[in-house]
Image (cartoon, rainbow, N blue to C red; front, side):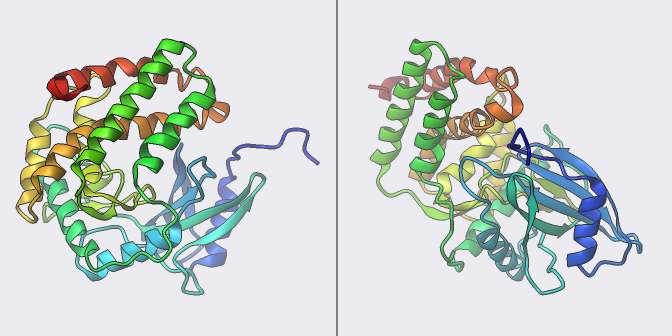
Length: 327
């Protein structure tokens, strides 16, 4: 019996290799190395024939269990609809995901074929437009996808109010005035979004910030990392790219314009969805803060301490974008 129950454990590489050899029909024995640990553990897997794969092992997390059943069903639908994405590899039994057990409990694993292509460049308008185009193709395909019992709904409860509660409960923001600022900003943002009344609902990628893709030889952005996705606001899915251009000290919107041009080359955007995307920049920031706040015990308060400083960014965005509509 352990004296200290783990919040999160890191599997040995040999254990990951054995797990993959046991459950997947790859040319073996495979080699394996960790690419990153963080919101998930991600491994590069190479078969003895040189074929390359990526294995993602989900963490247990405050926002709920990984919804790999809906995620992999959507990826299969996108592949069948000719949308460029990283499709999951079935197990020997034909399943698209499986559970493994760690000291902290069950963890969901999915194997993907590695995407060929280069990483997008932050200041390349062509890459930004390619991301916009693929997101539009994805939203078109989503019109014929019916998620069956999706665990996540990317609504304001999931994206804004529960993250705000996790920030408050974590104790990271000690200043009562800052906590009050965050609560007031969240309330104003929710009220403004709800006032639109008829925003488009779709199946969202949930994390289309421009770098969850690879640019292939055809210039297409091939998407991966769908585990933050689910049924939700189309405006939120657009906003994540804009948020990545203006948060954490960045201030350029040139790539946002290119991204939107790429999207509109495939699919129109309603005026309300476009305007709401500006509001959802705030929602996205709350979502990220909530993700980090929920890991304060795992990562340490020093690692997530930046959250306490983010009210300034949110207030500045409000002032610059909505000064005549705040109250």
